[in-house]
Structure formats: structure tokens, C-alpha cells
Length: 113
Length: 114
Image (tube, rainbow over all chains, first blue to last red; front, side):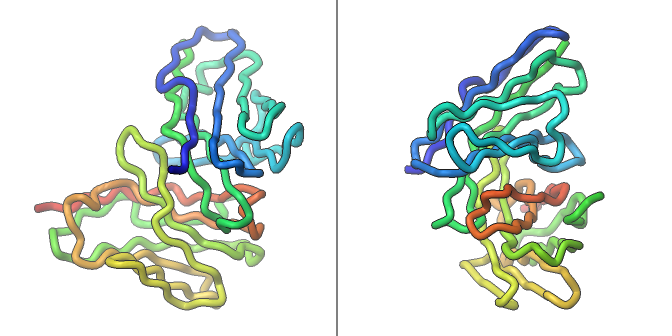
């Protein structure tokens, strides 16, 4: 069964901390994505990667960076967490053979205090 | 600039009724239009999707209607059931494999009353 696993369901971090959100997929998908989900705003694309060591900015990359050292793993990094980064973060993966059909993880609810 | 506009924000339908959610897009480069269903505490899950060369796609009780000239598409849920209560997102993609990511609507919170 298709699986995208995010390392934490809930995280609480302090302002200014460096935060790592980890995502692993077991489907050998080429493409991986990080979205954030906020009430009334839907899902917004932060960064995506179509290959190992490749990364592209999405719609809201400010304050974030990513790392993809292995095909199955895609990490989102908050260099210096701020309260406006409190949100639900969703990782997803896809492959050209499933056009548009991205598979999502369960999400990490991050609270920055 | 919101590229995919979704309405309504919330919707209450009686059991057995038809639920209709509408989306409109602006970018004519979009070439794939999926719908996602999300239950509380879960990530979104692909429900049904359509390409612009097709005007309608049906899977079970779920139907997408697509109007390319109007740049609009909609999700119809026939014989709506309480288990359909969820948040629904329309989305659009420009790349064949979704490599560029999806642009989502803001979501519709659907409640099916028994």
C-alpha cells in the first residue's frame, strides 16, 4: 500500500529554533512536495523536488528550506521558527505514471511559541 | 493571486441529496484537475480527477463536470451519505506528472445530515 510517512504528528517549538520536519515515501516516487495548510487558506505549496538534490520554490518559500539527499526522503527546514509558521505541514509524493495523483502524509501540526 | 477559486466555503446537505462544489480557475496552462477529500486528522486523499479534453467523469457516486470555455469544474456527490462529511479541495496542475505541484482551492467543509 502507498505510504507517505511524516516523522511527527505534533511538534511544539520555541521562536528562533531551527526545526526539521521529515518525510519518507516508500513508493519510489520521483516528485516530493511540502505544503502548509491553514484554515480558510487551503493548501499552499512551499517547496518541491523532482529529483534527488533538486529543489524548486513553490508559492510561499520564505522562511523555509528543504533537503533531498535520498529519493525517498524530503526534509523541510525552518531556519528560525516564528509564530506565523504555526500550521499544519503536509508532505506529498507523486510520479508521472499517476498524473496529478499526489499521495499525502498525515501531516505534522507545528506550534511555535 | 488566487488561481483556483472554490465555493461554497461550507455546505450542509441532507442524506440522500446531491452535494455540489464548484471551482473556477484562471490559468489556461492547467491541464489536470483533481479533487481531494480530507477527513479530520488525516492528509488529503485523491478522490477523482479529470483532464480538460473530457467534459465529465464519473466514479461511483462522484462526478466531475468540466467546462473548458468557462474555466470551471465542479464535483457532484450523488446520494450523499453521512460518511461523505469531510473537507473537499479542488486542485489544478500544469505538468503531466504533477511535478510542479498542485494549486489548491481553499476547501469546502461538507456536512451530510442524517
